[in-house]
Image (cartoon, rainbow, N blue to C red):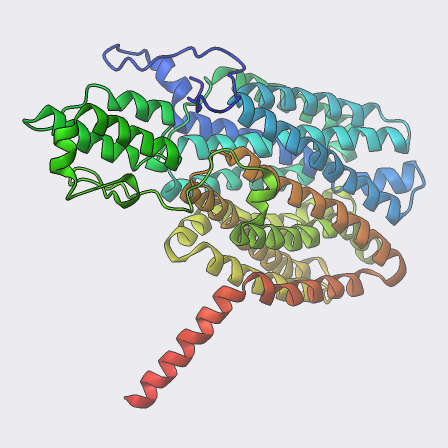
Length: 520
């Protein structure tokens, strides 16, 4: 069922609603399964899994293809990896705006998954560097649907206080896909030819397309009174009666409903209309509320009065990004994703030069970095309990340490621990940021989950473009150890800015505990 939208907006459904609220009708098991939040979460998880399998497949083999078959350099490899981000950056706002405007999630995701299958086939048919560039951009463009629309789907059907756990579980599927991708790519490339890994991924994308077709358009749940639409509240005013005196009761009910409306003028109109029809009741009730500006909720409602900071349910992406909490989330995302994506094009080259490692060996050693992200669900749950930014701060500290330490190892086994800490730190940074952004949207009453996650994806995309290109150029001139050291300095320098509030709170708490100890 297409989610209801305010009549004051210019939005219209892309497809007509196929369901109605008829609780007395017994629905079939298939009907309920297609609309269950758990089904939506599984489909979104599979979409992210598929996207990251396709993304991870190329990590160990693209450097080998570009260097050995096409005679390219490290800079060419970095640019090729960055092209994924260029496509993702270009498509993300388009998918987000269309999804929020038409209130439809399935169709954009289906289009994106078909595009992913086509782009992946393009990799297998590529005969020169520029065809690889085009296929990589197409792969990123298709990924914009999975990330933007998929995360918006989860925010549609799950309450904010449970979103961290759900998104953590979903990101775990994403991590499994990224973990399998390099192994699958290395194995198929070495033993079945350069086309095999891409054909496998194209088939996986088609399967996921069918799964998206299976689910019904998710019902958009509303978990806050601020999200109630003006039309719904208007309809509740007519015919209300609470208690023995219909006129007085209607006035009280109108007051309660008016307190839920974000538009002050419209709320005052409702109160004026109720007073006009029941002047005697208004006189008796004036001791409780003379006008809407001083209205408080009745004993039967917990709704608060509307103040001057009432929010708009249709906000621009610039306004969303201007919120300081979301800005900090985006900065943390940029830093963490830049470093992680910067490692991808140069690490296989470094292993080949240092240890003569092939694609399969590279794929296996990368498991150490990806395996900790399987704990994303636990990280999300813990972040919901103690605070999203505190968990992310700990992750940033671990990530900084691991980035510096990656410059030290000289054997396969010695890479395992630094890579594991590197992957754990990255997961602890990024996993809490998604529910933190959703929490801001919910508290503000904004109807813009897709736009919010589009900002996240655009930032992630930009970092995935900057990281590989920067890493490729630095690696060419200075080598792997200095590249990682420079990345470590970047992380350490950005941490106090991003987590200034949390660091200040920790310092204050430490000073207070010291004072209490001295007094004791």
